[in-house]
Picture 1 (cartoon, rainbow, N blue to C red):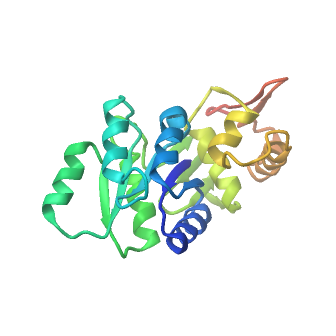
Picture 2: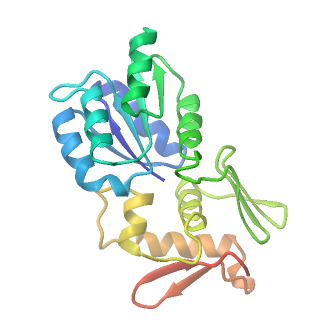
Length: 226
């Protein structure tokens, strides 16, 4: 899943990107509000959630949240704030933020809260994904096939999760790159094909199970019933 992180504190931004990518997210980062809001207005559909710092240069987090919601953008927003006041928190929720965290915070809690807001009814994101004998649990970062755990790399896990959230849909390579990697990745790279090949092998596709089908000239389709 792909996140837009808007945070101007360099050390925190680097820690967020590193920690969230380790947890299976693809992360795009902006450090100023003006460029971030311009990007979000155009590319909001590419993101599963936004992590938004309240105090930003240019356009602050409050204004970004207001602008996105006024434009009808429903992407979940989690606010990061150093403020403790209840009034601020109520104001943020009234503006359309889905959740907030007060600094300092743990990356584990941030990741859990992000997955929680993406499971809310408007997003219809289930806590556990299942396709026949295949089960994926995002919270515990585990995959099971016929009740035996399948050990995946971080990107293999993220790729499988993306496929399982879009069953029976034909997904082109560019779309997969946008959501599982980030917008700086080379669209001409064969990284998707390499990861799909490795994933198929680990899921026993060589034994005849075709969870991931190749759609010639386009990309791939995840078939939930095999």
